[in-house]
Image (cartoon, rainbow, N blue to C red; front, side, top):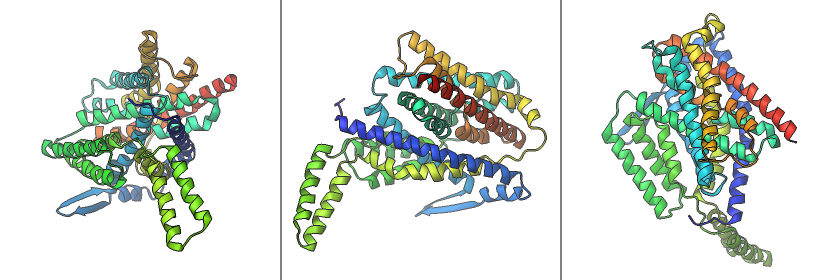
Length: 435
């Protein structure tokens, strides 16, 4: 692969840091929406909570039409944009960032594998004999990237950038695994004809990338077609977001040096003074240069970041985190489903990730990220047990009966809260000693 100019790597690293800073404030909004959902679902107006999200919304595209509940539009529509966004982040880091070497990129993948196997085994330990609840083994497998990165961002310089990038890569690989589990084990019916049409859209996206087409509108329109096909095929639509991210070009049309030189010429021309039409021409030239120096990937990231942090994830939390608590929370947590989900997240995640990473490093198949100690890695495994987003989604797919669904949501929220507090405390203590 052609080595990228250092200035491009610097610019992309700054973009990743901006994402982390956005995760901090976005995480606060996410917490507020989670609390609001819980209060609403357990208030005298609890019936309206369910009624709002069960409202049907219809969209028509010529002869094609879609009619789904508002909850489905959020989970199958807005969440595709979220997965597209984090897919862009990981692609960038793999190509020109800290995951560009084989050993470093291999580690988060093997860690994610351990982080999926461990929780699933713990869950089945408590529920393998129950035909109804055994389907929930996928619930504790996923890591919530927004919450986990938001907590790391709160720690600031106490944790190295390598740990933040590693967690981001692990979390998206973990969620990708969860999406594949949904596609393979939680899909009722598959329409292979529509899925093949989706493959056609993906092929067109790859051709556009190969031809170095830089228009974001082209990728947006083809991406909508890809999403529509996956949505109608029976495969979870978030896969479309990740596949779309893989096709977005990371190369800029011109390098920074050329941008500075050409822009300076236009600025100098403006300073010399000229007619109104000539001034507009130079201004348009500067605008064109500004677009050319940014890759389509960077332009998508910059445009989507505030919407992901402050709209998509908060609205998902508001729609999915509302659990009407009836009876004892302790009884719910001590039930087979409650134990499977909570211990699967807290114990399964730690054991699976740490064991797989230790084995990979021990066998010289991978290396730890720069400046990351084993203690930091252990603290990070606690943050990986925050299973909020995808765990809630998988719970809705796994259970038709409302009782185990409510229990699983309670376990997800409790385990995620405990994991967030403990993970933050461990990393803060290590970071304090490190400084």
